[in-house]
Length: 322
Image 1 (cartoon, rainbow, N blue to C red):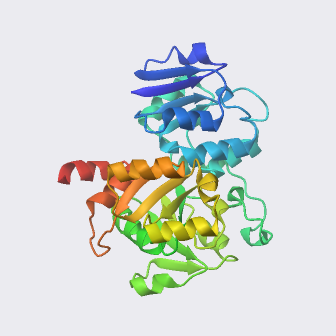
Image 2 (cartoon, rainbow, N blue to C red):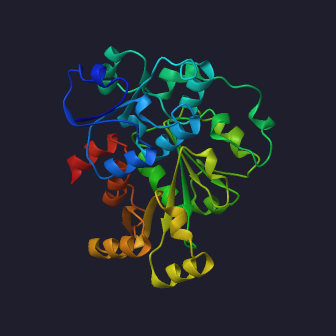
């Protein structure tokens, strides 16, 4: 079942011969859509671009990409010159939005056959070398990304980003073209996987460019820039000591994390505990990961986590094995 978010093209979208579970009409901020559709199951979300407030600003579309699985979103473009400009479409691809069309008849096709990067790579324009980027001004528009660039960042100390990146890579590489990096650190060398790469702040751009045709790139961010990623996962180890230390360091930390993808890692919390954590912190937990054995090549919880992130090829494996 599909969702339709419409405004100017409500009547046109109403002619589609597709199953619709929910339809809303009007102008919405990205946060409005997040509030309405977090934990709401749907197959595809078809969005009339005029239904998104301030859609002509590419930063708004980046925010949309960061908050939704863009494999499941189809954007119906309007006829405005700015949206149909080469620059705008190039930036759409750069922020990870591949499923867009001006033709209402193409929507059912995209539902069944979502675009990959190679289908829309021709829209991208790259002016100059990535190495010419000014230090401190790295932008996702400057990076010819692959399917998704997912950053993993520790919020509590030693929350497990490095090991989690390693485990996610091991599980994804059976079904996707995947590459993993760590920024400004050398912990990968202790995992004995030659395909893991380390990079400093100045070299990460060019390294990413070498893998722009990959389906997914994983980054252990450490203190690296978040804006090189299409999405970021924020890891919290929810032990009393770690949480109290975190809050003493920054009492507004959960205000800063509101609306972001929080994952509890190395967690011993049950479902009731997670609800208490959400209530007390004023945040929403995307996933609760227990302590896991990184030596396992196929871990049910990691598979469930990746399916929740939108990696649907693992869902078949999960259904077959468990």
